[in-house]
Length: 253
Image 1: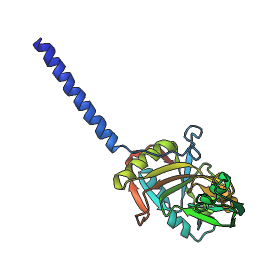
Image 2 (image 1 turned 90 degrees about the vertical axis):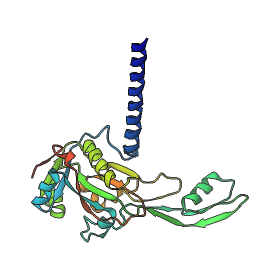
Image 3 (image 1 turned 45 degrees about the vertical axis):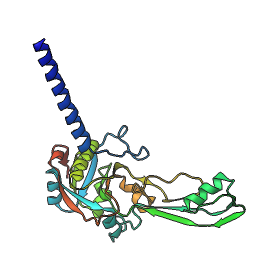
Image 4 (image 1 turned 180 degrees about the vertical axis):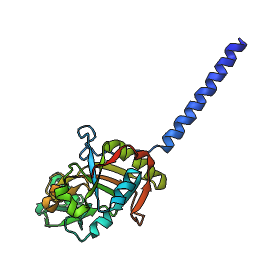
């Protein structure tokens, strides 16, 4: 009986230790939000490519020195093929609409324009109201799904690194960023090339931060990594030390 009691006691202690470890792991883990409209984790197997203007930048990258830019910095580039003043923006247009509280389509269109239709309203007209929403800022790393130096080198540089496993790379970098600042959302995927505006009951063009106009960007075939940390930060680009990505990247030019 004594041995059985001792064995039972040891088993209970081990279970308590496992529960404590599980709670700590859960507390320290990063929940990465994966919007299904933008993530290509099941279908896209990589690789992706990152171009650099300086050779030392490419060398640093494969050693785990990852330069993370921001949406705000990208908005300020003067080069038309590199800069985009409306990075992370989305605009809704109502057009001319008439209706009342009993018309759910009218109420929804008004809501999309940030207009609240109260009860018992009739014959309300709304003429071409717009509502623009945007991500104030986020960390971003831009790559491409195609190695096309003839298209990209003049804008982004002639030196290139291949990221063989984008998903593994993304998770490793996300964990490192999360050690520095709390990530609210993190996303990766192909950029969608279409107009950022929509109207009526149409669906939004795509997740904000992952939609760009076809001209002049479509031939870049961008694959983007983005980390949103909230509105209360004055973000600055920085070099992230992430040795975990060594072996996931290699120089190809």
